[in-house]
Image 1 (cartoon, rainbow, N blue to C red):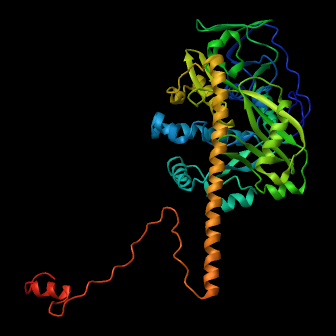
Image 2 (image 1 turned 90 degrees about the vertical axis):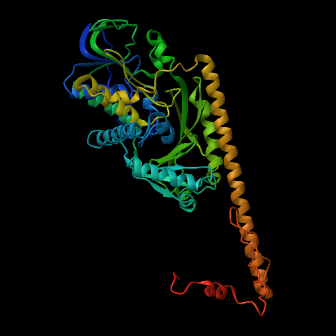
Length: 496
């Protein structure tokens, strides 16, 4: 998601991106990439840097969809929770997959520099917050990330979270100090420029009509030309079109919407003191400050295409719900883009058949995963890197078609409703505890003033109740004390 109000075709400097011609002549290359999004452009750049001839076919324009419309948060991990990842593939393979996700994040960090991409707006720090009180679960997750996955993390207690985010709706948090954020739109256009400089050729307005996968040299037909390639990389997400409908049907299309506010001045800094990205553990809200005093906020999503402007009011209401002191903030721009969500919650990365590769399913995964996929596939084709097999357990699974979209919509509604109900219950319990502490403090103060001892207070939840000490039974005068009787029974010289 861009930080400035620019059109979808704008380039890395906020001006119109350079015109890229349509493929109008037959071409023969080593690698053909279908789709000029983040994953496809990373494959193209890395393969060209390794010496391959590369052509990228894009049916519309570079970064026109989700790749050019995101908040630019970069952190390790996948959409599938780490505990579920371990359960699915085992600890050792989970560690290797996590390492790949960290490599992807570092790739973006090394690429998104002011020298390579002026105005990229790099800043560090990502905070994942919970809308329920999960202190014990937080400790376990922190230990797992730090010890088993070598990830730098910090646990934040409730007071610290609320000192940075002045709302009572968040409790504990996990801070990733080395995670970061960039201007997403500038990054995708900057990546296209870097791929072109490396030798890749990018053709816009060039949809794929048909593909013949047979033979060593694959054949691709476009409206105005034909292309042959030794390898084809399908990186078109949910927009691969009719020739690849079976692959597109393995993805549930989800449209995510975000809004950019007008400058809010000092009241924004008084409300949100954290300078990085903030996301909640339920994946409902994702926001950060851009341009010093503007708020960029993503929340609504649908399983059908809709006009983004329809959701400006929904974002307004969500901001007012989480931060009432901001009120109804003015919205100047609303964005939207479709992502492909897989049934198993992991991206689709690997070789489908000899010479045919897939890099898709990055919805709810993070920017790091598309970078990892691009690097991995380029190295697999040219170097024989076989780590793509780590993704083999996550097969292509049909997403349910129209029925899947309806089910996905209701699942999203249920998730949001359950999260809201859990948050209400957590805040009620917190308030009840606070009222009980206040009552006991007032009672203790009253007793102190009266010079009396008040009734024993109710123990906190979970406390162990101790029985009052029992008075010792009277001992008859003619009976020795218990310890004396035992001494008289000992054998002289025996063990004491």
